[in-house]
Amino acid sequence: MKTAIIPATNQQFTIGKIVCLARNYAEHARELGNETPTAPVLFMKPASSVIGDGDTVLIPSYSQECHYEVELAVLIGTQARNVSVESAMAHVAGYGVAIDMTLRDVQNQMKAKGLPWEIAKGFDTACPLSDFVPAASVADPHALNLKLAVNGEGRQNGTSSDMINRIPQIIAYISGIFTLNPGDVILTGTPAGVGQVRAGDVMTAEIASVGRLAIPVA
Ligand code: MG
Image 1 (tube, protein in one colour):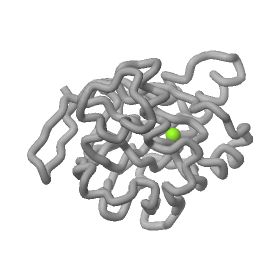
Image 2 (cartoon, helix red, strand yellow; image 1 turned 90 degrees about the vertical axis):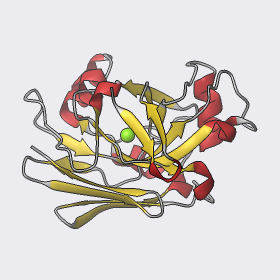
Image 3 (cartoon, helix red, strand yellow; image 1 turned 90 degrees about the horizontal axis):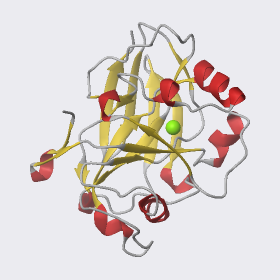
Image 4 (tube, rainbow, N blue to C red; image 1 turned 30 degrees about the vertical axis):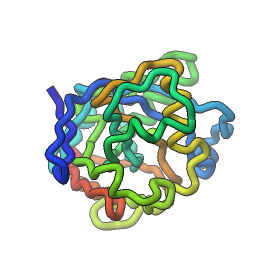
């Protein structure tokens, strides 16, 4: 059982489903040659893909191109089914840092064939996730600086103010399709600057006032 922890309030949640947004930052959609979507594009990672700070990402043998994507993670604290944009934020328990590890070569092959992406996005270790800070401690989740470095070299440096779909809209939209339960996590998309990591690299991801991850790759 994977656990999401909010140390400041001593709360623990068993992680359920992880619902992720694709192409939620226009500049990142462009860098991969994708159109900017109007409705949110969703996919999921299983809870079994979660690892914690200091754990190692293991690149599967069926990929030659594993990418990092730093993302703001939203932890759901109370059940949300068909909620309105106005009431959506009341269901957020906390915020954390995630890296949406992506086998880009495999994903591109799947996209070209019109097949699902799970094996590119949901493999074991594909979801490094930090501890969470309480929602109340984050004044504005749309004014956060997201950074990722590889071996100390800056690669991504963006702001959550550039999200196309914002968190209340995202929660309302998802909750009309999948009931969100306590312990479910939403990954809100990545800013530009994604790229490859190789065995031996160390990723550091940071969202100021939210959290930090140091994740080796093997
Ligand atoms: Mg992503």
